[in-house]
Length: 310
Image 1 (cartoon, rainbow, N blue to C red):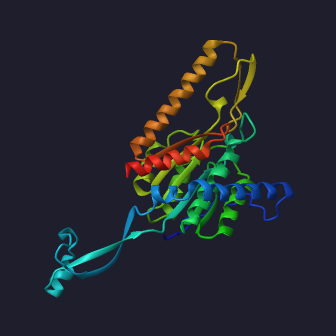
Image 2: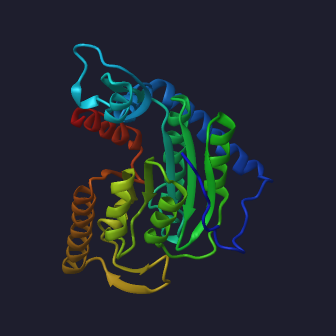
Image 3: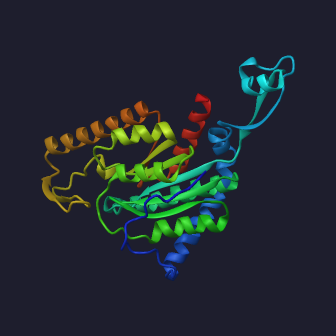
């Protein structure tokens, strides 16, 4: 894959620190160890079955043999050589995987033990290790409402360590989400088709058209990371809800069934809208909840379903 950073991430954004606190170092190490074990025990073969071998690379032109598919005849060479020749292809085994990870403020939410952005980092680590184990290259785009950080695709375990570290240590300059910016940047730096995982809570608007354009150019899977408290509210009386990205707040009475019921309907409608949009764009979708420990199972089910469709 050719990578040309046609425009750089925003100037003045805080750099990822090379010096890690003992707590953060241990956190990254824990994710690394857990991820390696999961890849070896669960993901071995699942990823390759779902993604590998989809493309065909041109290898050579050779003389036609009886039984060859006539659709593969190379007519220009055939005319020059005065004998039929065919194009030969081989399966493209090496892929480029791009992780497009949302670090906007809405990810700093979780109703149990993990925040959404922590779960996003674990998922990114799992996918990165899986790709590296399959001899694929992995790149990273971190975004909020601008491109915060970009790592060109590479191979190697040390590269995965950097991916995990950068996701966990990065502090965005702004709070809001702009998926259009992220998808446009992906299309500019990735000239050839990639396997792309967009990891976000997708709390954004007006990105449908750009998502469709990107899904035509790349093999896109949307990994939507949410939390149960974004789908339903507990009955605990008056609570104040604050939008993590805009700072706007509202006081609601959770004993009022009209309020809680309306909240659940709106949340369900939004999930259905996103699912329909992903399907119409030809992209895959995996829904993950930060309060649910079974995101590995959700990814495996997605890989199986994808393999069956192939």
